[in-house]
Length: 227
Image (cartoon, rainbow, N blue to C red; front, side):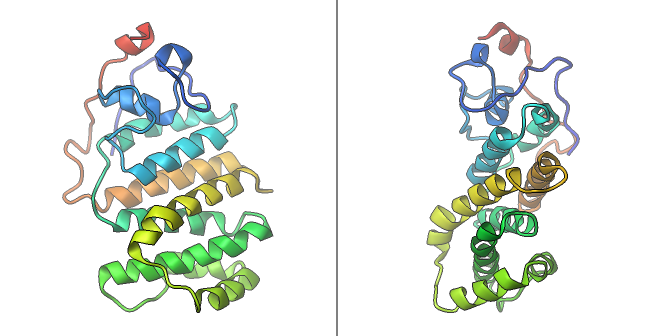
């Protein structure tokens, strides 16, 4: 999707803001552009994707947070009832974070990869198996992978339980872990993660989004005036 922001935009900052005069986080700005009530939980975006965007916004450093701004229009209208969306978001988060996070986090994220693949196979009515990205991520952390296979052998994850608990916890653990990782550029990894998750959800929207080449958004005038 090729979407456009107004020429002048406010600076993104951490946390919730009572109104535009106090600033905006990623999803609050999205709610404004979508013409919704001011909120960091707007209806225009898939709930778990919005949760990831809030986390990425908050865990990205002040120096690089504004680089997230061009992604905001791409989440407007991006929502679906397809249960695979939660799994895809969680799987993307786990496979992205697994190779770079600290060892103590790798164990939980390796389990998340296996659980995500299991639930996804169930939803798609096929035999469980690992997609190439999942296999590659696990191969990079062999000790965590061995532990996860042993742990998963005695644990069953329901679709409902995964969506309500495992998926949100995976996203939170992954984003936090990436932000604290000893990597060259954690902020860039977080931005790439959010970009990839947006693409994953868009792929599940039948026929793409209306006006996929351009999203009509609310003008910035009222925002700048703090209305």
